Length: 159
Length: 197
Image 1 (cartoon, rainbow over the protein chains, first blue to last red):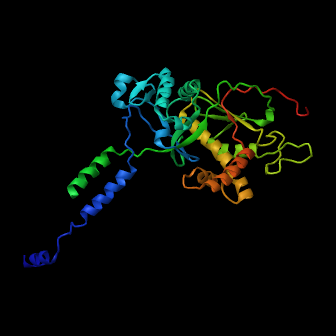
Image 2: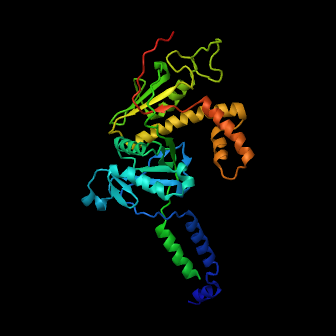
Image 3: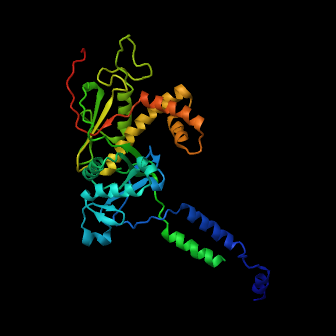
């Protein structure tokens, strides 16, 4: 027993003095990488991979369109077919034109010409659906699009 | 102190969704821009994607990994003999009579079935862009000793100053005009044109 006591006495407690520093460091890390998305995703959004990517413009110059299968918990009400999400609502294909124009009118005049539509489309969605969206965009004379992807080799995966 | 920091930390941990801010920038064609042009069949490179995500390139079935090299061979062919009897001077291709006259006239036509998957479509777009990038980088290295994507990055970087930008602008535009990206997704009416005309 005395052997244990002896050892315990000589062992110092772990200093927690640097703990706030570490926590702050982590805090700042997460604060900087966080982009708080203002809308909750209702659709699956597994983006494809690409290597020759450009970095997107600033967030205020973007109009985002999400396309994908409804999330599993919503599949009962929304079905299994791919759906379009604009802001925080599921929308029809015909809603895209008015939505884009409305978003565009919210932007300051000086940047309206630089606005890009970011198509955040799940990789399992069919091309036809994307083609329909592009057609809608052409009809409202919005031509700059960005196929949002993850950066990286798709490797041996199918895509 | 540490408690508050922890609280904030946990908040940010929970709300964080590291969003990607990368993607392929493309410009959609203007709808009213329906002028018809006469295109020589050899200047057209056809890619079709069917509903099973299979690729047909110039009437041959192909995997996406081979696509980039094929596109480079097509664009860089430089088969046209100019009026003064010289070839396109920066093309290093094989001058195959089946492939393009010169990169400025070459058009890539991409037809995809409505039921093909978007992932595959993006992969093809990516491969095409990679082919153009390879060629543009080569020319940029030859003319300016710098890679084209680096030049572009510098050009769009907010910290570059005006004089640097004006030089870069000219260079970027020169390179782009050497290998303009002509990708069409529309149905193309190719009029069979006699080679000797």
